Amino acid sequence: MARTARIERIGGPEVIQWVDVELAPPGPGEVRMRNTAVGLNFIDTYFRSGLYPVELPSGLGGEAAGVVEALGEGVTGLAVGDRVATFGPGLGAYSTGRNVAAATLFKLPDDISDETAAAALLKGGTAEFLIERCAKVQPGWTVLVHAAAGGVGQIAVRWLKAIGATVIATVGHRDKVALAQEAGADHVLLSREDDVAAKVRAITGGAGVDVVLDGVGKASWAASLAATKRRGLIVSFGNASGPVEGVALGALARAGSLFVTRPTMFDYYATPEEREAGSARLFAMLRSGAVRADIRQRFALEDAADAHRALEAGETTGSTILVP
Image (cartoon, rainbow, N blue to C red; front, side, top):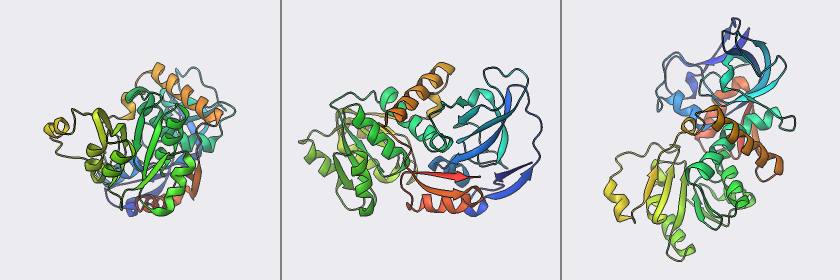
C-alpha cells in the first residue's frame, strides 16, 4: 500500500488530494521504488494548474530518491536495495512508493545522499544542460541569471562561477540579495525595482550579456531582450510568471540579431548516453563542492499543497524537499 497525490481537476494547490493505492507487482521493465525524499519543482505547479496539459486524473511530481524494493521482468543493471533517483518524465513522485520505469532511474553514488539527490537532480541537471550543452557558456562570458535565489538559480550561479563566467543575477526581493551574493553572483539586481536592462548595459560597458538564463518567462522577457548583446542568446526555460507568447521575430533583429531557444530537459537527456554523461557531470560538481543542493525548506509529503503555495508566492529560497 502506498500514499500518493492525485489531481482530478486543474486548479490551485487545493486540488491536490491524497489516496491509498495498492501497488501491483512491477511490470516488465519496471521497478518498485520506495521514496525517501521527494523534490519540489516549479514545473509541478504547471501540471497542477493546467499550464502544461495532463490527462486527468493524474499524479504529481517527477523528482524523487529512494530504494529499489522489487524488480520487474527484464530489468538489468539494478538490484533490490539499490539507491536510485529519478526526475521523470513520468509523473507520480509525490508518493511513498510506486512502480517506475527502470530506464528513468539513476543509480546514486555512495557519497550523494537521498536528500541531496531529490533536491538537486532535476535542478542541477537543468543547470548542467542549460549552461554546458545548450548555451555552451565559455570562461570569460557574462551571463544574466533571472530568479537567482531559487533552486535552479543558485545552482546555475555556482556552476557558472565554477567555469569562469561573470554572473549578473536578478532577485525579486531585497531579502534575497544575500542569497545570490552567497552563491557567487558578481552583481545582483532587483527585478521589481531596478531597470534591469539599463543596469546590465551599464555593468557591461553598453555591450550587454552573452547569455540570459531566464526561468521567469513573461515578466522578464522584455528585460532579457534589452539586456542581451548583439548576436547573444536568450535561453527561456521556465514560466514562473507565465509563458512568453507572441514573440515577433523582428524584435530579435532589432535587438541585435539575437538567438532565442526554449529548451526542455528531456530533449537534452533523451538517450542513455546523455543521461549518463549529464548525471556524472552533476555528481562531480556536487562532489567537488562547486555546486550544492542548498536545501532550505522541508515539508511533510502530505503538506505538498502548502509547499506549492509557498513556492508560487516566492516565499522559498534554494531547494525544497517533501519528506515521506
